[in-house]
Image (cartoon, rainbow, N blue to C red; front, side, top):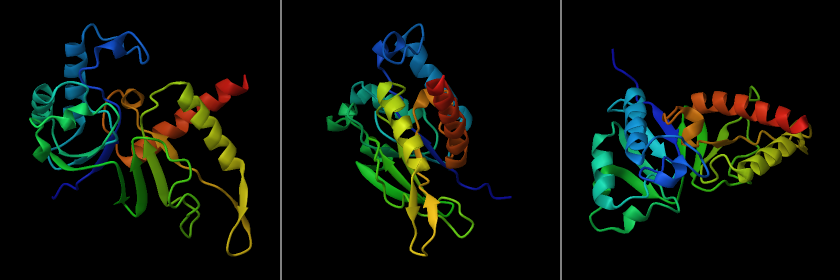
Length: 216
């Protein structure tokens, strides 16, 4: 039986970024080497050699030589959306061939859905209003960059407000705006690349809890 290829997504791994263990993310690893090894193991436990993994920026903050060593240990076909910390790409020693492509922005198809990929959140993304005949959203905006900071809380407020907005359709009736923006921050998935459906489930529960806490 042929095993299907899965599209998977993750953002802001920040391989080699030691300060994130004690500041901003407060990841809590004893050392940067421990963090790197944990993320490599979580990746390889989830990803097969035939899977496609779309990294939404800030893959690594270390030099190209060490980044190449990490890339060689990771399973799957890797696609990279450039992040503001991906300076290793400027080094001639970077193994560009390890990436299927490197872009600043992309739109791909995933099981009949349009997926917008950007390191930075795009608030008015392509297909934001689109639904299928059953009323299901057909476009998703996947982003990173903001980690779990105040900016992410502001984005959550925008999403909740937008989803309450009702707009008139070409058929003359009214509908709520889906506004499916998903932060694929690595810590939200315990550093595992996830499928779109897995991210949808995690995002739904996380934003529900976030909204409930803001109302208290």
